[in-house]
Length: 199
Image 1 (cartoon, rainbow, N blue to C red):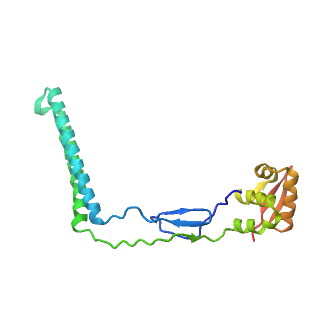
Image 2 (spheres, rainbow, N blue to C red):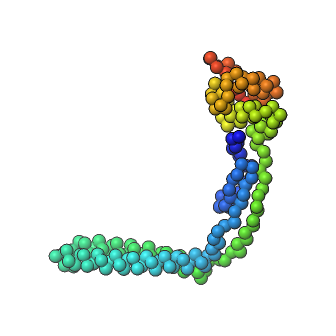
Image 3 (tube, helix red, strand yellow):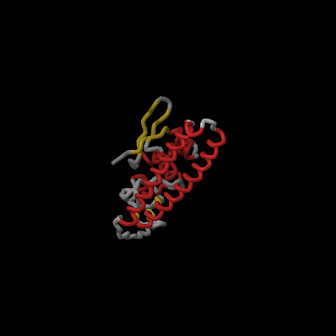
């Protein structure tokens, strides 16, 4: 039996972690809860790491320019090194200032974690239709599920192929479904189009 896609009718915030299963939504607890102060310390650490990289990179470039440039301090490479160093230091200072702001002035917020284990999702129209044909047997269920999966419209020949049934069996099942008012067939050239009726 193929699972039927469910469109949940429950709206959750976009930053709320959850898993959608065929008949329910499982809401997960967040793995890490960080406060502004912790984020500030993290950013200060990142800025220190950026500072170390700037120092290492600048030292290596200075050594390369000293050995390869014969013009002395008037060499154009010194201007490039100075520009890159200044931009990097400005970036490091920006990250450090944000980190310091979060550590000393950032508002602390109470973080409340509400755990909801499972919430039942209302049955979709497709699930209701499938439940209504339980008494008609497995073939009817399989045929109807293929019609629902194809968004309610499918060629009869394609339906027989997807359901893995003979054309004769599919025709008999469709006769029963049409008798109950669940589907209708319309002639299109050499084949029929099977259309799911909507109330």
